[in-house]
Image (tube, rainbow, N blue to C red; front, side, top):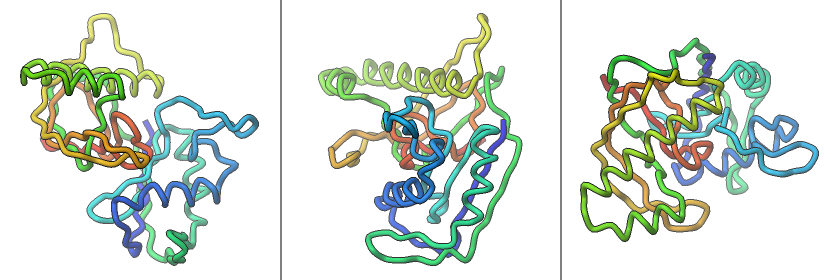
Length: 221
C-alpha cells in the first residue's frame, strides 16, 4: 500500500499538543474529509481507520498518510503548509521532509516484533471496567492479546485487506500500563512491545485515537 510520512523538522511541540496540530490542519483543510473524518455535507463522524494521522516521531511532529487516496491528497495539501498556529502562537514551517513509499501490509507466515512509540489505547469504556475488575494477571494478558488481534483485524478490513480462511493472527505482548489523558478524561494506555504474524508499516497506529498519535508502532526485528 501507499504510505507517506511528513516530518516538520523545525517545529517543536509537546506530545500533548499533537491533537491541536490535528485540529489546526483539519480546520485549514476542512474540504478534505480524510483529515478530520467528518462528512462534508452532514458533519457526522466517519467511522473508519484514520487515513491521515498526526504524531511525534523522534521528537518531531509528523503526519502519516496511508492508502492511495490519502497519499494523493496528502501531497497536494501539505506541501502548501507554510505555517501552523498552536495555542495562538504562529510557527513558520520552513523545513519539511516528505517521504512516500510502497509499504508491505498484511498477513505473514513469520512473527515480527514491534514496539509502541506512544501509549496504546486498547480498551473502550466497557472493556476498561472489565479489565480493572480482573485480578488474575494471565486473564488481563489474554484480554489485551484479544484486543490487539481485534485492532489488527479492524485496521486491515478498513484498509480493504481481508485475511484468508486459513489465516489466523497470533499475537503476544509484553506491556506496561500507564495513565494517559484522552479528550480530557483519564484512561489506561499500554507501552512496551508485541509480536504478531502481521506486517504493519512503521508509524501507523493501532487502537483508539490513532489520528491523535496514540498507539504508534515501529518494527524492532
